[in-house]
Image (cartoon, rainbow, N blue to C red; front, side):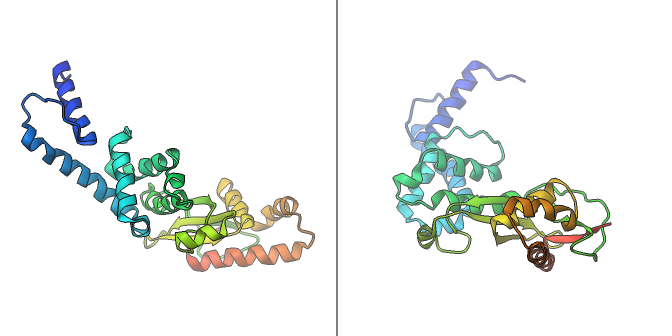
Length: 250
């Protein structure tokens, strides 16, 4: 069923008022009551963002957070009909609008990304894996990693420090985010660039460490292969303990 042009115009006027607070006469709507619509819609948006970004809300002043939410609410043309996806658009809007500089909060974009990735990984569709063994050899068996994951590069270590302290340690920081296959809990690991490369390759193509190590050695310039083998083997063993490595495929 198609809406009439008149109905579309009325809906557009109401939606525009809810976003901007600037009232334009709307047939059938009481000016004295229409503000309640805006209050309810705005509160839904604000509450959703508060729940998605609790660390950012606590870190910023109330005025700065309200400024960001208002700017997003008034100016952003939301693309998703799913309210749980709205925080991703908020994160992208804040970055594109350069609010980190306007508010003098260099770590703002990284902190929003860090918090959003948890939601993203938690809500990923379950990946069906082929049968695998719970025990195996870290070097010579094909490794099976938690299928719901994300690898991210940050400029500030907001995953291990308060955002204000993190600014003092600008650099290349990498995080591995995965969902525990048993509990569904999302975990974050601080990893090196070498670890990131290893994980990227293991996710691109299921393989054993023995198959992957020659490439790692050539890329990172290791002369002592035994040292590299032990280092990466220990990293994989740690992933096994933490639940990121879930099994082995012969």
